[in-house]
Structure formats: structure tokens, C-alpha cells
Image 1 (tube, rainbow, N blue to C red):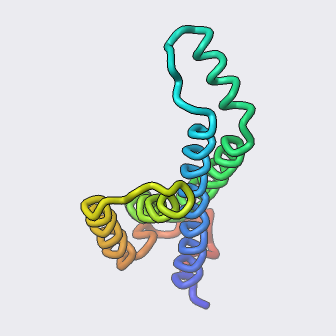
Image 2 (cartoon, one colour; image 1 turned 90 degrees about the vertical axis):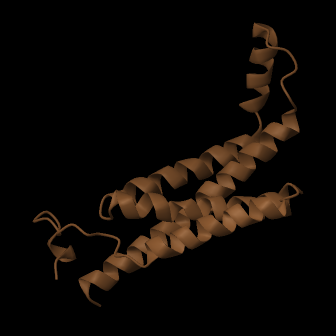
Amino acid sequence: MTAHKRLRTKTVVLLALMIVAGATGDVLLSKGVKQIGELQHWTPRALAEFLSSVFTNATVWLGIACLIAYFVCYMLVLSWADFSFVLPASALTYVLVPVLARVFLNEMVTPLRWAGVGCIFLGVMLVGLTPPSTTRASADHPAEQD
């Protein structure tokens, strides 16, 4: 396997993990906070009780764990791929979130919202046609050089 194919493969794998972890984390946080309910009063006591409920909710903690996994994958992929590739490609999270919200949170997603999601998807596909890294491999990473 050439260095270019290895780079593309590991980038795609990490981006996929990043996208799934990010979208799952966002949905779990939303679900966890909705389980607790809306903050009714902005008094210090009510805010403390709300935060206590948030930070003792298992669903919230699962969401936080997923978002930490997202962040770790993000840092790893940025260590070799261009930021101008990674950030737009990671926008697939915005495509997955409404799907998960519809399935797991029973949210209604309007046709206009789906159209916006479709635009994001098309943009990500265009970015995906470009190489993940346009910079030369450095001397620190000889395995990445052709």
C-alpha cells in the first residue's frame, strides 16, 4: 500500500470514528438534559440543583465520554491531515445528528432542515474529493513520504 493510500485510509477511519462519536455525544447530552427538564428559575439555588442533576445523570456522562472520544480522534487526525480538510469533513456530524435526533429523540425534522443537511452533505463530498494533506511530509514522519 502506498503512503498516499495509507494516509487516506487512516484519515477516513479516524474521521468516521470522530463523526459517530461527536453525533452520538451530542444526542446523548440532549437526551440526558431533557430527562432532567428545563431550568425554571435563574436563582443560584435552582441553577445549583440543575447542575447537580446534570452531573449525576448517566446519559450526560455517556455523552461527555463520546465527546472526549471525538476530541481525541480530532487531535489525532489533525496531526497528519490538513485542517482545511478535517474541519469541513467533520461536518458530516451535522448530517448524522438529525438522523439520530429523529430516531432516538423523536424530533421532527422539517423538509427545509433536511435540505440544509443535504447541502452540508454535498459540501463534504466535494471536500472529500481532495487529498487529506497538501503539505509535504516532514522529516519527522518518514513513513508518510512517497
